[in-house]
Length: 101
Length: 200
Image (tube, each protein chain N blue to C red):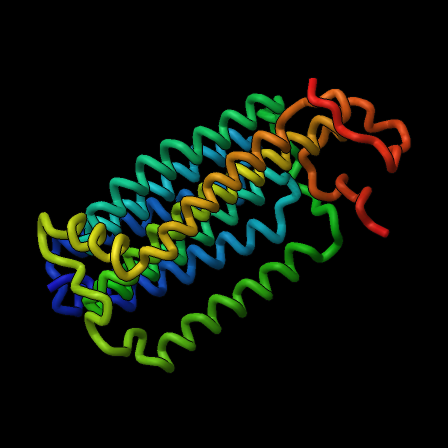
């Protein structure tokens, strides 16, 4: 008998919370990106858990698409970070205030 | 949590694998949010991603575990490290003082509330309910890849084609963003409304 799904879901909730906490308290854009990845992985873990508990491949297909979207998001996000760094020489979110009204 | 797990019918090897995976995930996540150095944060992220892959294998998602290691721990973290080195921000930053007064306490309260709400919702909804095997069974040993591939290329074919377009758009967007064009170097000047970007 394998582990009940509740434990995976609680673990995923904790991981999501840690990612959200890091996203809120850290000011380094790169680390904020990594925290978004943590939250995406927590969502992936719940998808796979639901796929196992409901005996349904749809959850795993969703994880597959989340992986693709995460890869695209990282590519574009890091491109934006690089181009901001070229102009402003900073990777700290508080310093990027030039777009405010 | 572990002691209550021992009270369930789960087998000891399963419990050990779950405990190892959970420890890797939580230690890695704590490392990401508490590292002063972005390189250390990226390496902690690898630990978390490996822990997720372990739990994927534990839940019979073999193909996704392999993809997790190859795409996430391989490609994405390497991309992060490449950008960190490229920008030269691989130095320690001061995280002892908070830039905004009360930011951390507020964040802690909100995040604890969010975690509590998620877990309370799960308990309220009896965690996992719903019809079984709507879009096909995940398959037993050695059948996971076949079933996932069949699902992606039949039921989710439109989404699959859309991700192909998304990847092309992302690649083109990254090239446009990261390109050092002649126009981008003149950013100090007031932009001319009639200015046409000239290819170098």
